[in-house]
Image (tube, rainbow, N blue to C red; front, side, top):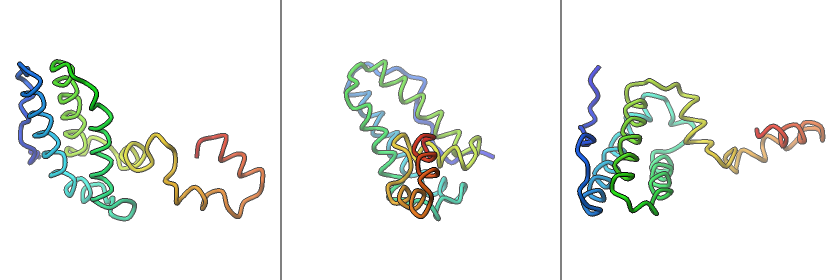
Length: 133
């Protein structure tokens, strides 16, 4: 199945920071345009909204905002394009996306933390805290 994602142009190297910046904006738009398809493919509507997923994608871009070397920016675009294609081609499973983009590096979604630890025994609360659930 052919992916509807347009080619970002990962083959060419950016000659200047301005050119790399344009390619980043173009890739960000392509990633945001792909969110509805990813939401539908992985049935993510029950755990996250498209707006929240777009915010997560935006945060991933902002995390690399300090990079000023065009070659490094090109490498990050290539890696991001590969990640996006893996998602669109269904090379990942749903729990991969949930773990990476819904739950994230910070642990559980704040609204879910209380639900997991409330109503349980002291033993279970310590168990959840120690095992990063």
